[in-house]
Length: 630
Image (tube, rainbow, N blue to C red):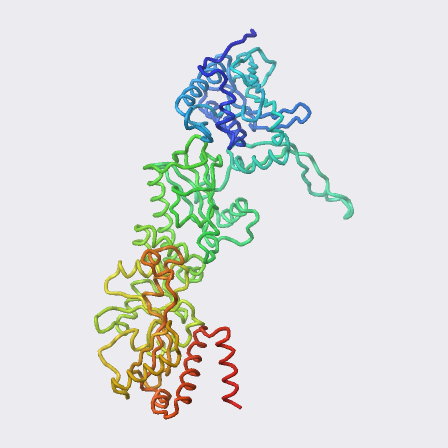
């Protein structure tokens, strides 16, 4: 029986308001309608399984169709369907009472808020792109089919329909200013973005499939083809399966499915699977990392029951893991109603904590199972681990078991192994263990050699956040300090009790210091004349550890800038070896000209070894050097 009615809502015309408030995110209408179709399909499957629905399901799917001539977009499912009473209840009453609540609550603040899911408005997102919407539906309960129609005003019609199969067809009469949603390419893009892994097959048109040639076919004969349904999604993605049911190749294949343009294989993966105290599944992949902390973020995709939500997982995934790739799926993640931004609450923090623990446990097991393979991957994953040690206290504690400290000669130590190795030789007179490191093995080669000649271990720590990490380790570990090998001459890096005897008296050292300072006339170099081994270099340029580290920390975002170090010019120490023969010659020289020539040439050689001689100074040095060998 045909009838007409008016939706009971206090607002004169809710549809322009829905359009206005949801406009910035209007493409989500397709996701919402397909989500509804999926729910209806899965619910019917459940009822059939428990015997409450006496229907022959067949191979259920959802179909999306475009009719350009009629300017309509169709979403067709083979799910529960609705009776006339259910249409009245779920479309006219529940949704609109939710709409009224929404408008009352958000009338002053709802701009661009996308109020959908929490208010039962998913279906009405259709009116963001359509002037008119039809629902043609038949319940599985064997009641008459119903045709509901609404033209974007509070008025609707309900009349009988001639649909014979259970399920629902939504017909959107696309507005003239939304015609992009009648383009195959645009719908394909949206289906791939939001519905790529929906649990029900989604058909969008047909495609041509090539079949194997018959055994008796000639070589020049074309292979036969057939038209088949174009199913755009994978209803059973890897993260929905049990880890025991997946091989290594399955994980690699799924990675390619997620990132078809990514040609490098992931290093390893972590399968997440928890059902208490929250539900969460997913697979995280460690790709090969660069040293850049920013370029690789936002590659983890967040799903809710296999419906894509966002790739902005901040708050769900600890920040240091946002450089990973993969999928996280949880029905327990609270989303705002547009499903675009996450709300940080207690459940989210528990999920974040769980993921941190799971990643740490996986790294530990990889390290324990095959240490050699883990060491091989270290350079590709260290930036994530070091970042995690800095930003997550619980991860820092667990990382003691697998974080590695590589040396310049290719050895890898855990923290405990490192301290055990260096403590006997690299403990200074104040009982502090000094960890020597280089950030650039080539640029600091002479300093590394000097340390190695003393029997010291030198770590190779070259990631951009290493200054922050050392600060963290120094504050967390007892009696340890990190010093870069070019921070001082080798005898001062690890101060022992024994002092070198100087060939120059204190007055002579002071006089020589003044002569060299006046000759080089460069305020960025502080001259220090010290007693060192006679076979150490005559001039050594060092950069004070504290000042350099503060500047580095500011460069990567940290404490240096707060204390004003970041903007200070580079400062260097010019350490002069009072016991070297060349220094003796300079000191004893009667000719001021010769003295100045020896000082300038020697200091330029020291600068050259550090890459500090540039521009005009380098040109002058080369010319002077040629003059010396004429």
